[in-house]
Image 1 (spheres, rainbow, N blue to C red):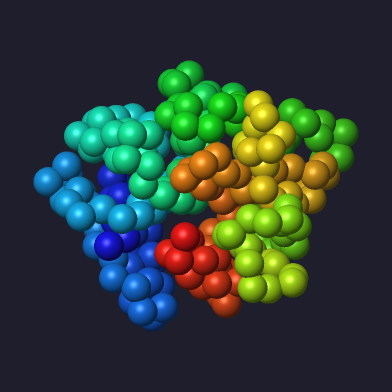
Image 2 (cartoon, rainbow, N blue to C red; image 1 turned 45 degrees about the vertical axis):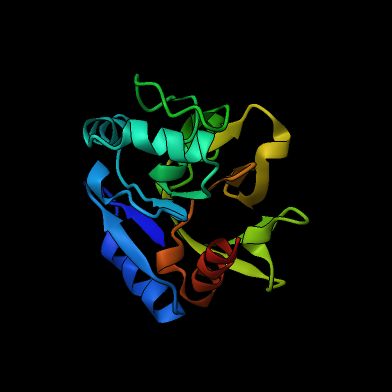
Length: 203
């Protein structure tokens, strides 16, 4: 069973709909009582880092999900701000991240001050996966829908499993053991997004 963590941010219903179309069983988890028979976890998120971390910490599910991911090694996929939450910290806020994948969430504007690029980075962009990542198997060319102003700066470069370009080459997907994250929105990315969610469900 795929559990979609519904802590008040991110369109949990969109993921439920996609998994249903793909033929996978999923459910929305709003409390620790819903975390039964968990096989995989989707951690969505939108908006500001501190707001997302506050809602997640106050959901009552943080400790149980920590155990599922870090002790039981349940595969988890963080999406958009849900990916940024996997980091140790963010330049956008003051709260600690989950620190499941060591790194810092950095500002695109600070890294590209002379380019005058529109922010947030919004719309379709090419994604270049690294070799061998199970999230990106099955298609040669990948395009996804982005909406963000910050990106994941991995402490260990091996944790970066895909990149995109917007004024600079930035990490747009991360992985460490059973933990995965993507900056883009697979639920808004047509067949590319469906294929990535299928790949995660099959891990």
